[in-house]
Image 1 (cartoon, rainbow, N blue to C red):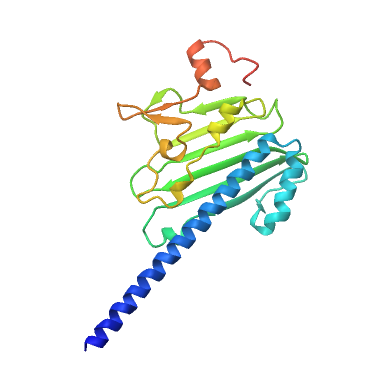
Image 2: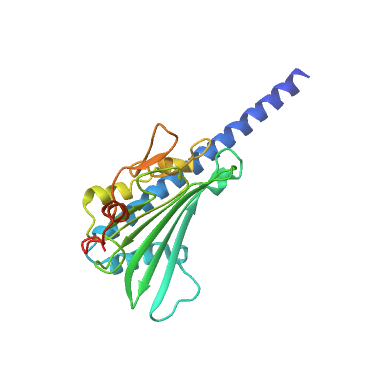
Length: 229
């Protein structure tokens, strides 16, 4: 009888260790891939030939970097995604994903958009979009962030910039907190997703760390500067 109990305990211990090893390996693989994808996304902003850089990624990822429906000779979008679905399926951490879209127009890469989000069980789940334009001027704004100032809107944010953004703005926009992929309890708001861009205040609100063109426009009550748009 004692031998049977020992075998059961040993079997359960082995199973637990196997599950832990699987979770650790899966979390590490997802985190490592996220670091690599984010680094690739950053490279577009400093590349002298973003279109050629994208073509190199096509060769690297093959079918993982897929064209979306509706592509024409003049316009096409591509997507590549990443998630922690294996770990999230065990209900240990919330489902978190990073999706990147590339927009081509007339054969050239114009925009790259990154979406980073966590699916929480409550009514609000945080999502942040980071968009960079590669054909300045004409592909968006120099630098903008929303929400800006101090606000209670903690769940949905966007940061936009193009080649005119300075290094501080570009680095902050791309400093995603990738630990959300394996963080117990998940990332709760925009500050957790992108702490270089937003911070908590004492009044249960968040405040943007950098000033974008929308905030400048609101505070000046005037017209946008040609340097920003």
